[in-house]
Length: 339
Ligand code: SF4
Image 1 (cartoon, helix red, strand yellow):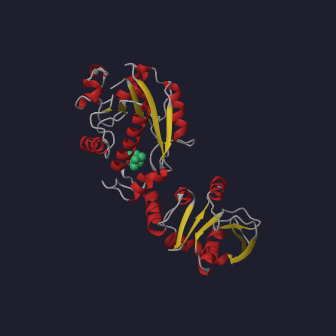
Image 2 (tube, rainbow, N blue to C red):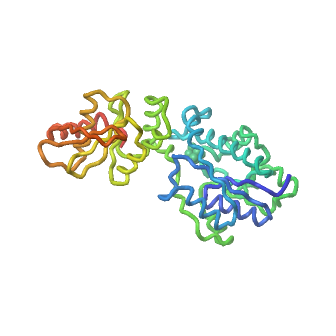
């Protein structure tokens, strides 16, 4: 056992404090940040937050994008989900297992986390923590500097690498002790705890269920699209995405795949529509009507261009404005369960 450790690192205050406490005991810390498409830490992304915080602490940072492998866990969680599609226990077992591999790869001896006993209902309860340790093969090797005194001593503590007396006994959801500790340790620049995980949101979880049900062979583009725009499941075979602003319109185009239909109202500001799947005539007409419904078109007849991505060749479909009004009403009740 040596003085080298891997820290699971979100870039949030708790993980910063945990690292700082370990650095003060002379531990060589390597931060590890996991990235999935479901993180919502900051507008600039989790990686930005983690990079900035690691720099402030002066520790090396490794970022792993685990989205692809992680989807299997979201689809088939062994330990169930929280209030949404968040498989927290399985998620933690998976990330700890990844951390163990990284620990072995760089010749480190143990893991550090900023976990606080009882702070998160699903993954930071005592029995959940025990399951996670056991199933990730890390029993005795996970040091939680903020709550360590509430647990049995770990192997680095027993072997004298870490002085247990200098570890803490924080528990629960109140943050006062962490905020005071941040002041004491000179950590002034840390993110507010606004970030999170889209899988905990009920609305987003419906979209994920829709993906698993209707697109069993989904790819990374399908996963990214879940986060964009209004979404309409038109049939088992066709789904329409409608941008709500320019940023979403651009995002839709950036995730378009060959064969997707791109819909846009002619000569009028409008959302971009991306129609994926195998729509029949009727569903295409419905998609055109929905796009017209969300455009600023005022004419009795609305013209919508339709092209097969990536071709620039367009066909023009025309829809009656009266019809798109009717569709607008029906959208809300029938086809638009997700926005
Ligand atoms: S909230 Fe999301 S990221 Fe956090 S443990 Fe649960 S599933 Fe994993």
